[in-house]
Length: 485
Image 1: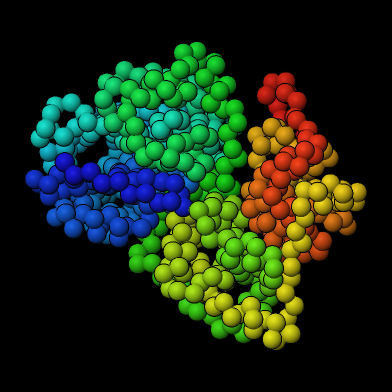
Image 2: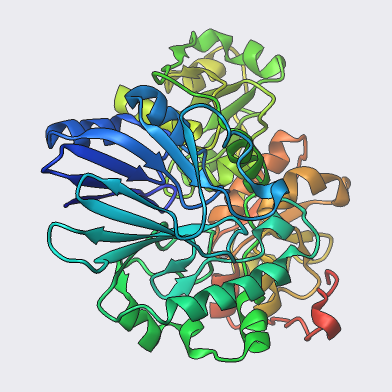
């Protein structure tokens, strides 16, 4: 058996190629849209990708199953479990095989059994893998978003992202019951999960790439809970707000994402056109580091630094119905391709062009003025609170654990739709935990026409280190959220 793990840092997402060297065939589980990586890996090992499958309808990226199958001629296998409204809409198409609980299929001498493991999503399946050339018992299980290392998949995404009311508790109870089956598996069985640390599909994922059933049963929190009601409360408590684009991804992947084909690298746009592109209503994303943007930015641009959080905030803040242009830090072609690939991963296929770094210089030479984002320290903020609206763009669980007295909470992912809730005639000071999310939020507010917006450098961490006052959110009856202070 050949076993390969592929890991995308931006998505914190793992996919797997399982092949049989004797028969020269392979299966890919949970591929993303970048099909070339799987094809190249298979060809280099003398394998042909015959089967493509996935554990569930993903919420955090566009599935690459249809993409990879179109490129290789492979058959697609998808879950046929779960309620009708959350089954694959394309499962009856030619070249697609539905899978039910305990269905088996072969990849040469490798036997794979699909197990319905609902909880994270109602249709979720895991794959028990047996290398029959070596033994008659499974060697491991591909768990997708069911069991991670040190955590389990969150069961609240249908309710929080897809707005399916009442599904969070149902999913939590399904997850508890799926775990009861999982506990019966042998200790030695390897666990190959779908995500690692940094994913929003759970709240405490480890950076360790794999584990075993025995280790998780002994040390992971979810396996220590024997009471269903206690587990439901624990698994739902403190889950972060899902990125705004998750709802769109669920629908796209359920209905069947379009086949992208070869990745189209956008054209370089003449620097002199920056003004007209902004005037057209297109979105220009400045991908430089926040400090560089704050020191001098072209008014109307939005700053989303190209780092490991780029996909999360691009998906939460960028519109899917407007043209996108990239600016800043694009010096070499490789970096541009990385950005375009990252955006394509979450369905942004409308990147129309990019501007070289000297577009900012040309802007000033042609009479344009660069904006600057004022930076406040925690002590600056404490001295200037009077007349300032303090905006906290962290998550609700962070807010509950401690926030600035008198602050207003609007998580960054919700800010595009809630800008009008902020008074338009008062200066704003924006903060998060460290200063990274608040820098993005400040750029969004300035791009929306706000004039007096400052970023609190160091954020809540610096505030607490300075010994300044913090308020806690009191527990609310029936689990209701407390209103903003």
